[in-house]
Image 1: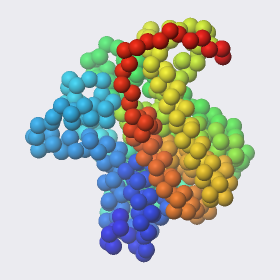
Image 2: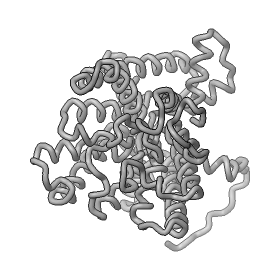
Image 3: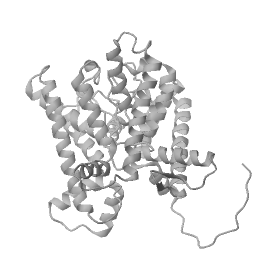
Image 4: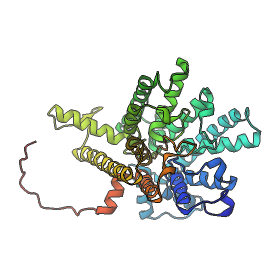
Length: 417
C-alpha cells in the first residue's frame, strides 16, 4: 500500500498497515477513504488482499500448487484441513477445487448483477469495476466500498439490498455448509449434518432477531423518516451486516445507545466456521446455549437433533466466548483511557474489529471511528482484527502453548457453586 502508485497524497505507515490488515482480515474498517485516497491500482491491491484473506493464505497457496500439479505434503494437508474446517483428510484436494469453483461462480453471478445495476448510474467500464470490487468485498464479508458513503446512496434500491446481503450470507455460512447443501439437493446426501443444521438455524435466528431489535429500537429514531417498507429493507440490510460485513445503508452514528450496545453481541458472534467471517462463530454460541440449557435442567447428556454433544466441545465454546469477551473488554477499557473518547462508541469499534465486521459509528465524516485514534489505538484495533480472523482460540493457544496430555487423574474435588 505504501507504493507511490497505489495511493494519492501522503500515506503514513500505520494507516497503510491498518488498511492492509483490514483487507486481509476482511473487516472493512477504514482510516483512509478508499475511492479518494487510493488509486485504481491501490484499489486492485485492496481487492486482492480481500480475496486472499477470505480464502485464507494456506488455501490460496495450496490451490496454486494444485494448479501447477505440485505434490502436497501431509503437513500442508493438515494445515489446509484446519484452515477449511474440513472434517477429514479424504477428499481434501477435491473439496478445495469445489471451493474455488463455488467462489468463482458465486462472485461472477454477483458481479454481473451489480454491474448491470451500477450501469444505470455510470459508464459500463466503471460499472464493471464497481461490480467486481463489491461482489468480491461482499462475498468475502469485507465491507470495503468504492463509494465514500458506502451504500447509503442505495438505501431504497431492492437490487443492491438483496444481492449484497445474499453474497454476505453465502460467504459467511462456510464452504462445508454450501457443499453439503449442494450435495443434499442433488440427492447425494441422505441427512444434513448437525453442524450444517446448527449453522443454518443460528444464522436465520440471528438475522431475524437483529431485524426485530433494529425495528423496535429505531422505528421512531434512525428510521423515523422512512416508509414502513423502507424500514424493513434497511433493518434487513443492517442485520445481515451486523455479524459479518461492514456495508451500511444508514448513518450508524444516528443509532440509539441501546442499539449500539445490543449490536455488539451480534458482531461478537460473527459468521460460521470455514467461511469468510470472523468472531466467535455461530456454532460456538449455539453450543454454549445448549450447554446452559442442559445444565439448568440438571442433565449431563447434552444433545441436539438426536446427536450428543461432547462436554469438551461445550467447554471449548464457553472458553472461546470468555476469552473473546476478555480481549474485547480489555481493549475497550484501554482505548477509552488512552483516547478519552466515548466508551460505548469505542466498544462498538473494538467489537466490530474483533468480529471482522467493519461497521463503525464514523469519525464525523466518511472514515471509521478508528481514524480518531492515536497510532497506539490503531495498533490495538489491528491486533483485534487479526485475532478475530485467525480465531480467538487458536490465537490464545499460540500464546500460552498446548499442555501435554496427562496420564494422571486425581480424585474429584467437590466445589460449591
